[in-house]
View 1 (tube, rainbow, N blue to C red):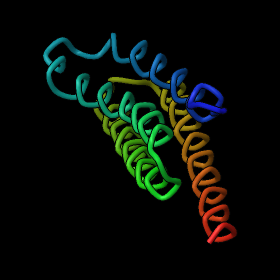
View 2: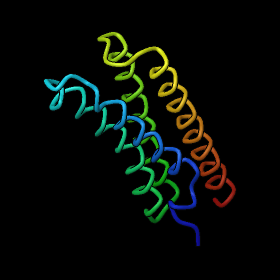
View 3: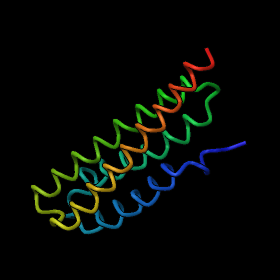
Length: 123
């Protein structure tokens, strides 16, 4: 039986979380309860929703949690733009994080598509 630990998108999300945390260490201290907290929570939410969805009893529920994970990835992506605009990250850091978020979004979309196909063939 496969679990969330077998999902490549979950592994990518873990790396992404680590990178978000590493980069956000350098954010201004007055942002610890603002942008720093928000970007970290949203990044963690991506992986958490993938895990929670995979533990649900139906593919339909899993898809719903993947939708939430995708929305969290868009939120974090937007936060990268804000951080770039405010000078909290540089262009190279932005590019790295942006590419990671895009890859995770593609993977979530692909997983959703395969689950939806499975639903239509089993019904």
